[in-house]
Length: 268
Image (cartoon, rainbow, N blue to C red; front, side, top):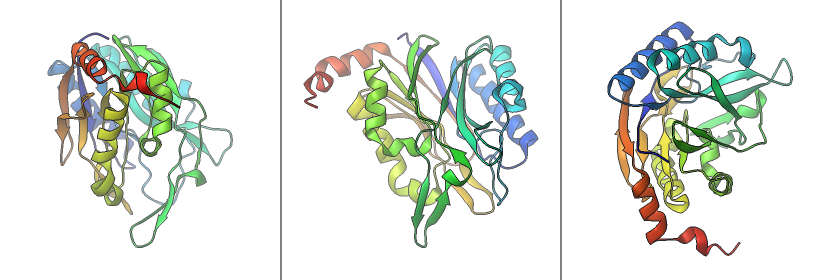
């Protein structure tokens, strides 16, 4: 891993694709101007369903959202994580919720299909069935990009620590958690879960989140953040759209893993 300045971008995406792309592009460009060379965008960046209609998705190769952010990465000379878009799936009724990672040339490095789907019913709080419209992925993804070993996840994956252990076993140094975390659950669980994943895996965590009222019943928590391997929040965007930057220092990562070598103490 090399010392890298990274950024997380916080958005309030809606069903207006043109507006979403414009706002995401403006904030990505601002983060790049601020010196970030790796920039992470949240889940559902280009299009966030707020009504009852389903998003059948687009093929990766012909997606206007994917093409837009690939071109933006090349234009800004940054590595860029599109937190997710709906990729055409196994049927006309279900898509995949897919992260796309671009290198500095705008080429697709890898993709990741969200494994854990958000099917919950908390009476009086939040009801959501992601599996009605989304097909689950089945493969953890870790890859090299811009001098770091990056493990990919999306939103609800955050609640499954065994998934992140697999990413670390594959060499992850940085964990990406793009999300559209609900306002109701986010107040109680978002930060504590992110910090736990950083601490127990001794990794940097990049968590770009959606924020605010998107339309219909969709309301996201926000509070996008960057966390170090000791579990300290080193940058955040609390409310509103915006971005935050921080340096990821490999010496700090190595020091934490050396001084508290819990990875080598695992029994199971």
